[in-house]
Length: 223
Image 1 (spheres, helix red, strand yellow):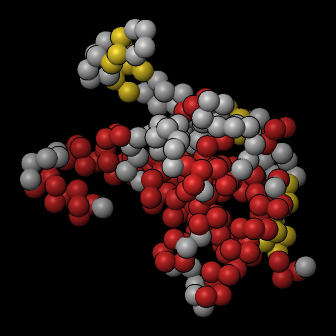
Image 2: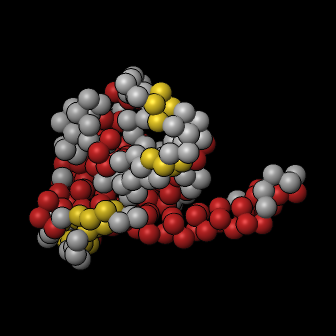
């Protein structure tokens, strides 16, 4: 990534400050957000045993076909796990709101947002809007099956923002999440100790739990 950014800078398209900001975003902003996304996904899988078992079945089958090695190719084959992570990010978007400055007047149905206005899209609320999501509080990974996603509004799901200012690390983040969760699911049964509904969450720059949460990891070999 750094090589690409430096190559662009040689074309006078980016300054050193621009490059530093992109690297900071990629490395540091991605660390906390991916960690919390992994926590929420693991908690949801622990609370939904049927879905967890389906993920494990997929992971085990793909692993057998690839000599029990985790590679980029293996991670890309985990389509059900991909849907589980997406659904977790819908319910608990790591970044629950973002801030943008309007560069031109934006006309809505009944009024105009003038250029220069700062707006704060509330991603958490958008992801639970019943106009776009039936039973929005239910954890249902199959919402992201291709046939159920094709007619959905393109901005109904924006865990990584959207448009020219979207997250440059979203593909890397998804691969990270798959690698973490697939490895754990392959080796452990997840059992809930605390439940998300009882712990509560808070929205800072990153969505997080109100307090430490507990989960039981039972080694599969011990069963």
